[in-house]
Each structure stands twice: as C-alpha cells, then as structure tokens.
Length: 323
Image 1 (cartoon, rainbow, N blue to C red):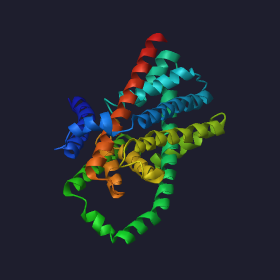
Image 2: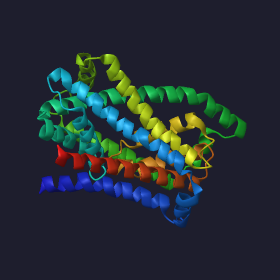
Image 3: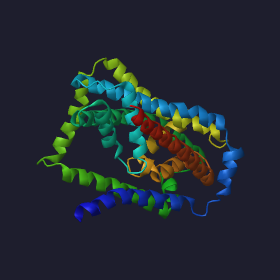
C-alpha cells in the first residue's frame, strides 16, 4: 500500500503541479489568439530552422554516451545509443526522470550492455552537465549585472520595485516549485544509506567528474558536451525570431531566459511544463515583453518543441522493431 501511494505521488504530483501552474497562467486566455499566431502571426521558417538543433542536441548526447561506455568494454552501436536518448526524452514527457532507466534498458535489450555500467555513466553525464550549466550561469550573471544596473538607473526602477510588482500568486507558484525541489532533495537524502550523507554526496559528484579521465579522445568528449548545450541554446534562441515582440531582444536576453528555464525544469513536471513557462515568461517581462505576448511565446515554443521530442521518441520505438 505504501509503495503504491509513493508511486501515485511520484507520477501524479508533478503532473498536478505542472497543470496547476499552466491553468493559473492561462486562465482567461484568449485561445483564438493562439490559432491566429500559428496561422499568420509567426514566422514558421525560424521555428523550422530551430528544430534541427533540438535533434542535434540529442544525437550528440547519444554519441557522448557511447564514448563514456567504451572504457568499460561496452561498445553499443552509435545508432542504438541515439535511439535510446530519443526514447529517454520522450518517455519523460509522461513520467519525469523515468527516461534514464529506460534508455539503459534499451541498450541492454538491443546491444547487451550491462545495466549497472550504463547507469553508472548516467551519473557522470549529469555531473558534466551540471558543471557546464553552472559555468554558463556564472557567465550570464556576470555579463548581465551592468545591464540590470543601467536599466534600473535609466528607468528609476529598483529591486524593491521589481519585487513589489511580483504578484502574490507568482510568489506562491515560485514557493511551490521550490518546495517540490526541496522534497526531492530530502527524498534523495533519505535514500542514501550512509552516515555522513552530505560528504558522501559531494564525493560521489567528484568521483563522477574524475571518471571522465578514462574516456578516450577527451577533446572529442568535451566537444560533444559543449555542442549539446550550444545546440539546446540555438534550439531556443532561434524561436525569438518567430515573433515580432521577441526578435529584437537579442542573443543575451535569450541566454538569460535559457539559463533560467534550464533551472526551472529541475522541478520534475513533464518536460518542465508549468515551471518553464512561468520562468521564461517572467524573464521576458523583465525585458519589456507584454505579459500576454510572453505567455503566447512560451506556450507555442514549448508545445512545438515537446512535439519534436515525442516524434523523436516514436522514431526510436520504431527502430526497436527493426533492430
């Protein structure tokens, strides 16, 4: 009974949270404006141009994963690794975080790769991604501090003014997301059966990062790693040119929104639905985009990019039958 309740909460709570945020953001929304935007209000050529970068990010992740398996005498086919990534991301649309296990099972079934070894590389992969996104965040914050100071000085705004402009519901949504993240961290800590949990967790991250030393062709590994995040960024940034109210914002604003959105998807809702919408819309509003226009942007961009993830997952599933 306890296990069943835990499963229901693990699957149902993220869906409910994401749905609640989306309902709050789009209550009273004029949905006819969405169809108008899709038909005549956006430049589809830029959306189509952004899609290959979303595919490239997953392909590079699959190639990097195969490279990480080689030092352990596991040499799955490149195509199998890429298909596994496709299925991983698509399955996480339904149940957040389940894709990590499924992709390891895919390689075990199609290539005979040992589950324990595949799962071990996933930890290292996440450590590398966390390192890169933290460096990107530091770079973005340092670059944008002068911009924020100039913006506030020229408009007479202050930090207090921005904070006071944040609605009560907005604070509640932020608090709910933060609470869910803390619950996740608490659950992970409970699962660690060691006396000094904090020290062991840090040691595990360091060990995961140091294991990169065993990878063959380290330069190629880091090219893959940086290429993954550059592709994600371009997948997002190019969509700015789809709409008249975002095309003039520029690559730095897109970088700020990208970084904030990346942290928002830590909240385990399907493909970040809800928290990502809220976070990116808030950034766009900070740079002068109207609230309704910002809501339109995040709704269309996230929906189309989610459809791409689902489509790639179907491609991976079809290839299971062929392999």
